[in-house]
Length: 238
Ligand SMILES: NC(=O)c1ccc[n+]([C@@H]2O[C@H](COP(=O)([O-])OP(=O)(O)OC[C@H]3O[C@@H](n4cnc5c(N)ncnc54)[C@H](OP(=O)(O)O)[C@@H]3O)[C@@H](O)[C@H]2O)c1
Image (cartoon, rainbow, N blue to C red; front, side, top):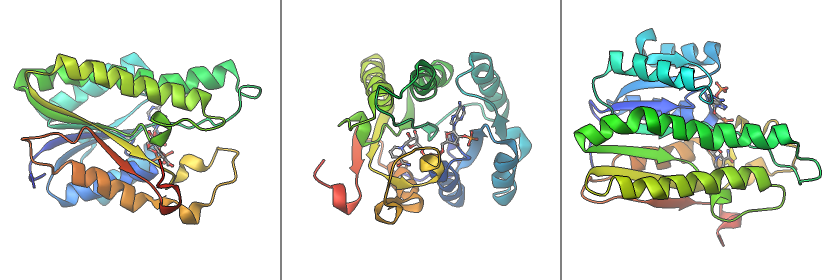
Protein backbone atom coordinates (compact mmCIF):
# COMPACT_ATOMS: atom_id res chain seq x y z
CA UNK A 1 0.00 0.00 0.00
CA UNK A 2 1.10 3.58 -0.68
CA UNK A 3 1.53 5.72 2.43
CA UNK A 4 -0.70 8.75 2.96
CA UNK A 5 1.87 10.26 5.32
CA UNK A 6 2.95 13.79 4.29
CA UNK A 7 0.76 13.71 1.17
CA UNK A 8 -0.83 17.09 0.37
CA UNK A 9 -4.54 16.41 0.06
CA UNK A 10 -7.48 18.67 -0.79
CA UNK A 11 -10.87 17.37 0.37
CA UNK A 12 -13.86 19.35 -0.91
CA UNK A 13 -17.24 18.54 0.56
CA UNK A 14 -15.37 18.15 3.86
CA UNK A 15 -18.49 19.14 5.82
CA UNK A 16 -20.50 16.28 4.31
CA UNK A 17 -21.45 12.92 5.77
CA UNK A 18 -18.80 11.07 3.77
CA UNK A 19 -16.29 13.94 3.42
CA UNK A 20 -16.01 14.66 7.15
CA UNK A 21 -15.04 11.03 7.84
CA UNK A 22 -12.62 10.99 4.90
CA UNK A 23 -10.89 13.98 6.55
CA UNK A 24 -10.63 12.07 9.84
CA UNK A 25 -9.20 8.94 8.19
CA UNK A 26 -6.67 10.80 6.05
CA UNK A 27 -5.44 13.01 8.87
CA UNK A 28 -5.08 10.00 11.18
CA UNK A 29 -2.91 8.44 8.46
CA UNK A 30 -0.56 11.42 8.48
CA UNK A 31 -1.85 13.35 5.44
CA UNK A 32 -1.47 17.13 5.13
CA UNK A 33 -5.08 18.15 4.72
CA UNK A 34 -6.72 21.19 3.20
CA UNK A 35 -10.48 21.16 3.65
CA UNK A 36 -13.32 23.03 1.94
CA UNK A 37 -17.06 23.28 2.45
CA UNK A 38 -19.82 25.88 2.55
CA UNK A 39 -20.99 25.48 6.14
CA UNK A 40 -18.58 27.72 8.05
CA UNK A 41 -19.51 26.56 11.56
CA UNK A 42 -19.24 22.90 10.65
CA UNK A 43 -16.01 23.32 8.69
CA UNK A 44 -14.30 25.04 11.62
CA UNK A 45 -15.63 22.39 14.04
CA UNK A 46 -14.07 19.69 11.85
CA UNK A 47 -10.84 21.71 11.58
CA UNK A 48 -10.71 22.11 15.38
CA UNK A 49 -11.35 18.43 15.94
CA UNK A 50 -8.40 17.46 13.75
CA UNK A 51 -6.10 20.41 14.55
CA UNK A 52 -6.24 21.71 11.00
CA UNK A 53 -5.28 25.40 11.04
CA UNK A 54 -7.43 28.13 9.46
CA UNK A 55 -4.88 28.51 6.68
CA UNK A 56 -5.89 25.05 5.47
CA UNK A 57 -9.63 25.74 5.44
CA UNK A 58 -11.77 27.33 2.75
CA UNK A 59 -15.42 28.27 2.97
CA UNK A 60 -17.19 28.85 -0.30
CA UNK A 61 -19.56 27.75 -3.01
CA UNK A 62 -17.75 25.59 -5.53
CA UNK A 63 -20.17 26.48 -8.32
CA UNK A 64 -18.76 30.02 -8.19
CA UNK A 65 -15.62 30.40 -10.30
CA UNK A 66 -14.23 33.22 -8.16
CA UNK A 67 -14.58 31.04 -5.07
CA UNK A 68 -12.70 28.18 -6.73
CA UNK A 69 -9.92 30.55 -7.78
CA UNK A 70 -9.74 31.83 -4.20
CA UNK A 71 -9.61 28.24 -2.96
CA UNK A 72 -6.75 27.55 -5.37
CA UNK A 73 -4.85 30.63 -4.19
CA UNK A 74 -5.32 29.76 -0.52
CA UNK A 75 -4.44 26.09 -1.13
CA UNK A 76 -1.15 26.90 -2.87
CA UNK A 77 -0.28 29.40 -0.14
CA UNK A 78 -0.48 26.48 2.27
CA UNK A 79 1.04 23.68 0.16
CA UNK A 80 3.33 23.93 -2.87
CA UNK A 81 1.89 20.85 -4.60
CA UNK A 82 -1.23 18.72 -4.62
CA UNK A 83 -0.99 14.94 -4.36
CA UNK A 84 -4.71 14.19 -4.10
CA UNK A 85 -7.91 15.98 -4.98
CA UNK A 86 -10.83 14.25 -3.28
CA UNK A 87 -14.21 15.63 -4.27
CA UNK A 88 -16.90 14.50 -1.84
CA UNK A 89 -19.24 17.42 -2.58
CA UNK A 90 -22.53 17.01 -4.38
CA UNK A 91 -26.29 17.33 -4.16
CA UNK A 92 -29.19 15.04 -4.98
CA UNK A 93 -32.53 16.20 -6.35
CA UNK A 94 -34.70 13.19 -7.09
CA UNK A 95 -37.98 14.11 -8.83
CA UNK A 96 -39.76 12.95 -11.95
CA UNK A 97 -39.68 15.47 -14.79
CA UNK A 98 -43.26 16.61 -14.01
CA UNK A 99 -42.00 17.94 -10.71
CA UNK A 100 -38.41 18.75 -11.62
CA UNK A 101 -38.02 22.49 -12.13
CA UNK A 102 -35.51 24.22 -14.40
CA UNK A 103 -33.86 25.54 -11.26
CA UNK A 104 -33.57 21.99 -9.82
CA UNK A 105 -31.93 20.81 -13.04
CA UNK A 106 -29.57 23.78 -13.23
CA UNK A 107 -28.55 23.52 -9.56
CA UNK A 108 -27.79 19.81 -9.90
CA UNK A 109 -25.64 20.31 -12.98
CA UNK A 110 -23.84 23.25 -11.37
CA UNK A 111 -22.84 21.39 -8.18
CA UNK A 112 -22.26 17.91 -9.56
CA UNK A 113 -20.71 18.76 -12.93
CA UNK A 114 -19.70 22.41 -13.29
CA UNK A 115 -17.99 22.57 -9.87
CA UNK A 116 -15.84 19.47 -10.64
CA UNK A 117 -14.90 21.13 -13.96
CA UNK A 118 -13.81 24.29 -12.09
CA UNK A 119 -11.83 22.19 -9.60
CA UNK A 120 -10.09 20.26 -12.37
CA UNK A 121 -9.25 23.55 -14.15
CA UNK A 122 -7.79 24.89 -10.91
CA UNK A 123 -5.79 21.89 -9.69
CA UNK A 124 -4.96 19.61 -12.64
CA UNK A 125 -2.27 21.97 -14.04
CA UNK A 126 -0.20 21.51 -10.87
CA UNK A 127 -0.58 17.73 -11.10
CA UNK A 128 0.36 17.90 -14.79
CA UNK A 129 3.47 19.85 -13.85
CA UNK A 130 4.57 17.21 -11.36
CA UNK A 131 3.20 14.49 -13.68
CA UNK A 132 1.53 12.71 -10.77
CA UNK A 133 -1.48 12.84 -8.51
CA UNK A 134 -4.79 11.22 -7.68
CA UNK A 135 -8.25 12.61 -8.42
CA UNK A 136 -11.24 10.93 -6.74
CA UNK A 137 -14.91 11.64 -7.47
CA UNK A 138 -18.11 9.91 -6.36
CA UNK A 139 -20.45 9.60 -9.35
CA UNK A 140 -22.41 6.97 -7.42
CA UNK A 141 -24.30 4.12 -9.07
CA UNK A 142 -26.70 6.64 -10.60
CA UNK A 143 -23.73 7.71 -12.72
CA UNK A 144 -23.77 4.18 -14.15
CA UNK A 145 -27.39 3.01 -13.99
CA UNK A 146 -30.20 5.59 -13.83
CA UNK A 147 -33.34 5.19 -11.74
CA UNK A 148 -36.79 6.74 -11.75
CA UNK A 149 -36.63 10.40 -10.74
CA UNK A 150 -32.92 10.75 -11.35
CA UNK A 151 -33.04 12.62 -14.69
CA UNK A 152 -31.15 15.65 -13.35
CA UNK A 153 -28.91 13.71 -10.96
CA UNK A 154 -27.95 11.02 -13.48
CA UNK A 155 -27.40 13.68 -16.17
CA UNK A 156 -24.94 15.42 -13.83
CA UNK A 157 -23.16 12.22 -12.80
CA UNK A 158 -23.03 10.68 -16.31
CA UNK A 159 -21.69 14.05 -17.45
CA UNK A 160 -19.05 13.91 -14.72
CA UNK A 161 -18.00 10.41 -15.80
CA UNK A 162 -17.82 11.51 -19.45
CA UNK A 163 -15.80 14.60 -18.59
CA UNK A 164 -13.32 12.58 -16.53
CA UNK A 165 -13.05 9.91 -19.23
CA UNK A 166 -12.05 12.59 -21.72
CA UNK A 167 -9.57 14.12 -19.24
CA UNK A 168 -7.95 10.68 -18.89
CA UNK A 169 -6.86 11.11 -22.50
CA UNK A 170 -5.10 14.39 -21.53
CA UNK A 171 -3.02 12.77 -18.82
CA UNK A 172 -1.94 9.64 -20.66
CA UNK A 173 1.77 10.41 -20.47
CA UNK A 174 1.72 11.19 -16.75
CA UNK A 175 1.23 9.23 -13.53
CA UNK A 176 -1.96 11.13 -12.73
CA UNK A 177 -4.71 8.73 -11.75
CA UNK A 178 -8.46 9.33 -11.91
CA UNK A 179 -10.66 7.13 -9.75
CA UNK A 180 -14.45 7.09 -9.80
CA UNK A 181 -16.36 5.63 -6.89
CA UNK A 182 -19.77 4.27 -7.90
CA UNK A 183 -21.58 3.91 -4.62
CA UNK A 184 -25.10 2.87 -3.79
CA UNK A 185 -27.11 4.52 -1.02
CA UNK A 186 -25.04 5.85 1.88
CA UNK A 187 -26.63 6.84 5.17
CA UNK A 188 -25.67 10.53 5.27
CA UNK A 189 -27.34 13.98 5.38
CA UNK A 190 -27.50 13.71 1.56
CA UNK A 191 -30.99 12.19 1.93
CA UNK A 192 -32.36 14.90 4.25
CA UNK A 193 -33.91 16.99 1.49
CA UNK A 194 -34.90 14.14 -0.79
CA UNK A 195 -38.59 13.29 -0.77
CA UNK A 196 -38.21 9.54 -1.17
CA UNK A 197 -38.93 6.63 1.14
CA UNK A 198 -35.53 5.09 1.83
CA UNK A 199 -34.36 2.41 4.23
CA UNK A 200 -31.35 4.06 5.81
CA UNK A 201 -30.64 1.00 7.94
CA UNK A 202 -30.01 -0.96 4.73
CA UNK A 203 -27.62 1.62 3.30
CA UNK A 204 -23.83 1.65 3.40
CA UNK A 205 -22.65 3.55 6.47
CA UNK A 206 -20.86 6.86 5.88
CA UNK A 207 -17.84 5.39 7.71
CA UNK A 208 -17.69 2.45 5.30
CA UNK A 209 -18.06 4.78 2.30
CA UNK A 210 -15.24 6.99 3.62
CA UNK A 211 -13.06 3.93 4.22
CA UNK A 212 -13.44 3.02 0.53
CA UNK A 213 -11.96 6.43 -0.38
CA UNK A 214 -9.22 6.02 2.23
CA UNK A 215 -8.42 2.61 0.67
CA UNK A 216 -8.32 4.16 -2.83
CA UNK A 217 -5.88 6.81 -1.58
CA UNK A 218 -3.43 4.08 -0.59
CA UNK A 219 -3.29 2.19 -3.86
CA UNK A 220 0.19 1.55 -5.26
CA UNK A 221 0.99 4.11 -7.95
CA UNK A 222 2.06 1.56 -10.54
CA UNK A 223 -1.58 1.07 -11.47
CA UNK A 224 -4.89 2.87 -11.27
CA UNK A 225 -8.23 1.76 -9.92
CA UNK A 226 -10.25 3.58 -12.54
CA UNK A 227 -13.49 2.66 -10.82
CA UNK A 228 -14.85 0.99 -7.74
CA UNK A 229 -18.45 -0.11 -7.22
CA UNK A 230 -19.66 -0.31 -3.62
CA UNK A 231 -23.23 -1.37 -3.05
CA UNK A 232 -25.45 -2.22 -0.10
CA UNK A 233 -26.13 -5.98 -0.01
CA UNK A 234 -29.72 -5.64 -1.19
CA UNK A 235 -28.66 -3.83 -4.40
CA UNK A 236 -25.62 -5.76 -5.42
CA UNK A 237 -27.06 -6.77 -8.81
CA UNK A 238 -25.88 -3.49 -10.37
N1 LIG B 1 -25.25 9.55 0.19
C1 LIG B 1 -25.47 8.73 -0.83
O1 LIG B 1 -26.37 7.87 -0.80
C2 LIG B 1 -24.61 8.83 -2.06
C3 LIG B 1 -24.64 7.75 -2.98
C4 LIG B 1 -23.86 7.83 -4.13
C5 LIG B 1 -23.08 8.95 -4.36
N2 LIG B 1 -23.08 9.97 -3.45
C6 LIG B 1 -22.25 11.14 -3.74
O2 LIG B 1 -21.28 11.27 -2.72
C7 LIG B 1 -20.93 12.64 -2.53
C8 LIG B 1 -21.01 12.97 -1.04
O3 LIG B 1 -22.30 12.71 -0.56
P1 LIG B 1 -22.69 12.73 1.00
O4 LIG B 1 -23.55 11.55 1.19
O5 LIG B 1 -21.51 12.92 1.85
O6 LIG B 1 -23.61 14.03 1.00
P2 LIG B 1 -23.77 15.20 2.09
O7 LIG B 1 -23.61 14.68 3.45
O8 LIG B 1 -25.04 15.91 1.73
O9 LIG B 1 -22.52 16.16 1.76
C9 LIG B 1 -22.50 16.93 0.61
C10 LIG B 1 -21.31 17.87 0.65
O10 LIG B 1 -21.34 18.66 -0.55
C11 LIG B 1 -21.12 20.01 -0.20
N3 LIG B 1 -21.74 20.91 -1.17
C12 LIG B 1 -22.99 20.86 -1.68
N4 LIG B 1 -23.18 21.88 -2.51
C13 LIG B 1 -22.03 22.59 -2.53
C14 LIG B 1 -21.58 23.77 -3.19
N5 LIG B 1 -22.38 24.45 -4.04
N6 LIG B 1 -20.33 24.23 -2.96
C15 LIG B 1 -19.51 23.57 -2.09
N7 LIG B 1 -19.87 22.46 -1.45
C16 LIG B 1 -21.11 21.98 -1.66
C17 LIG B 1 -21.77 20.15 1.17
O11 LIG B 1 -21.24 21.29 1.79
P3 LIG B 1 -22.06 22.15 2.91
O12 LIG B 1 -22.85 21.16 3.71
O13 LIG B 1 -20.96 22.80 3.68
O14 LIG B 1 -22.92 23.07 2.14
C18 LIG B 1 -21.33 18.85 1.82
O15 LIG B 1 -20.01 18.98 2.32
C19 LIG B 1 -21.86 13.44 -3.45
O16 LIG B 1 -21.19 13.72 -4.65
C20 LIG B 1 -23.00 12.47 -3.73
O17 LIG B 1 -23.61 12.72 -4.99
C21 LIG B 1 -23.82 9.93 -2.30
